[in-house]
Length: 272
Image 1 (cartoon, rainbow, N blue to C red):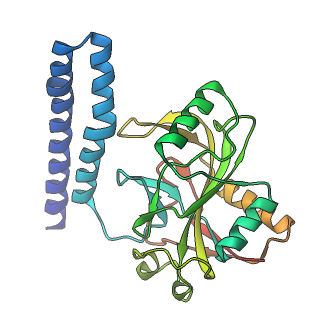
Image 2 (cartoon, one colour; image 1 turned 180 degrees about the vertical axis):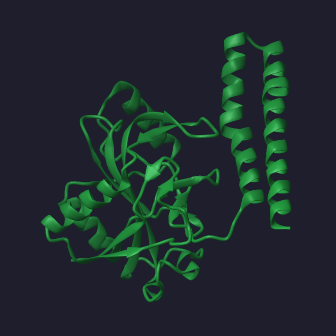
């Protein structure tokens, strides 16, 4: 019975793929090509395909194939696996900001049309933008609450960066290996001591997202190195104490998430 269910699911996903290709090629492009110059028709087709049609097709396929699992990684807005969770810091938001400021990291600007346009100009012209915004990744049913970065060079093309989600201390008694730890929750009140659950990666240039082909940052495969870099920098400045390691998502094949190689370990430390 289980094999039959999986077969039906795969057939439905294949059908979604066929319909998606037909819609892009024979409806969107054909219609645009009849009304616009060829190069403009291609650009319009790409925009609609990458940012409207393909994300919805991918989300539909993922809903069909969805399995119960512990999400030891973040999710993109399209429902695809994002950056692995690899860091938890315990403290207030003020302590978190002070720790990263002491290590020479800048807080990312909120994502908006203005900050996105400034990011594009800095990226294309290779100009500094030390507080460049991050794309939104989701954990606990919401986008990140805060993020920090350290440029590599003079532009945001390459940078160390980490996103954080605040989680109330009532979750501290739960193990990250249990589904209850990862349930959706609103951010705790400002000023409380909370768990700052983080996903750290290193941007290395320009790339396209898989399946939807949206323009995004290319990232280094080794997320363990980025986690260890942050822990080392904060520890060197005595901004954290009592670092320990826990393993999340034992039931999830998270050793390779998207293109990332992750050991599945999360460093947990207390902010000083």
